[in-house]
Image (tube, rainbow, N blue to C red; front, side, top):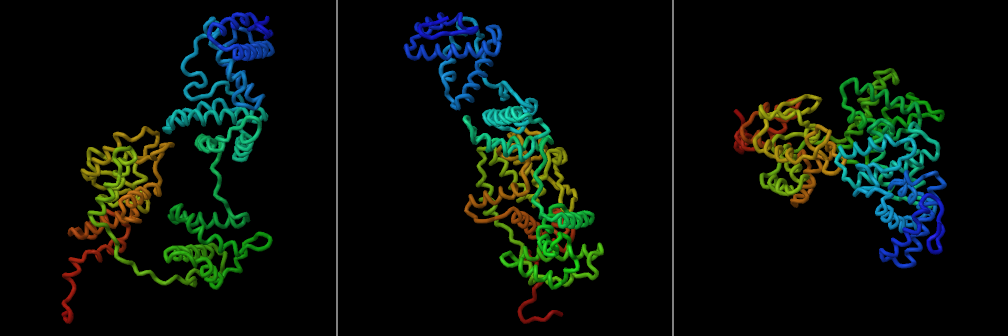
Length: 506
């Protein structure tokens, strides 16, 4: 069948003359009509080559052909992409195709024509991203990336069990080259990886460990010993970071740990070499970690003599007065929260938790929806060391919480305070603390950390006549000697105890 100078074979040949007349009636130029007829003829030949008849023709087949042409030619806009949509309108008017719906390329964010070993994972990823609060456009972009990953794996005869970090890197590299490039895959694969970790298909990349296996074994053994004694995981990791390089100095040429090289002199030389450049507080952490390592080595028989006491400490740090904030400063911080947006309402509630209840950043981050007893007017938090504390819920704090919870994004995470951007998961301790620092900087107060608000609450309790026991209960201190430091801030009470100049105590 021919239309003008264009010859057509295949299942669409019977429509060639009708298409030619339709294009002329539609006002298409002669040159554009010819190009459309050529694209129509090539598509008809492609259908015949794959055994696709008129009864099988639908929008998905046309999309598959256009995608194949893009891959074959190495262009995003081949002739099929430009002219087949025109022929498609004819096929719809002729009754060959059903009218297309408003969305052609996706089903709720899931790409069509999935191939390879991960189609099920694509559907699950889309559902997960929607629950996490990602925008529809982002969901579609990430879903298309994992769909390309699946197709790429299918071409290489890989299975879902072959998914690994190394495979993802190879895929991103492949996406950056070739006739059809998708450079956005390097960015979108980050979200794909998060989901693969969440569903167990990919494991978290372990923190880099010093290469020698015996060194890692020793560090793990020391960490287990500390954990058995109730030391928190974050503290264990911190101590391993400070003292690990000292242990590296005991490694022999064949990779063994030679504890015979350990001595007080070696430990002090390590502290002296590592300490410069760090604050006094950090150097104290360094000494504590090295002492802890040597204490464990003696307790487990690795060294014959107790050496921990021989590690010299930095100069003592005399504790200064806890520094609270003035009411005007707290008011400036709360006023800096932009309550016209969800994040600002959340930030205001966070500041209220600090300034009225004196909580730690970790306690605010760990607050769950079930921890608030609205009927009883109280809430509970997990303090140090893993103690659950029950505190009264002041009316203004409750009002700020209610304002936020009314507009809090929907999430499967039961934490009270969530991230402002997807994934809508709980804020970390650092994220909670950064809220105060950001608002203080916006208010022009310089660098103020969340713990200053905790000091403010404690000094107010003592200044208002509250006892140290009451301050201790509010702050959740395990030891009274920590709370007693706030007694030095009550200048009015201390002034009564001070003797006039020149008088001796009786």
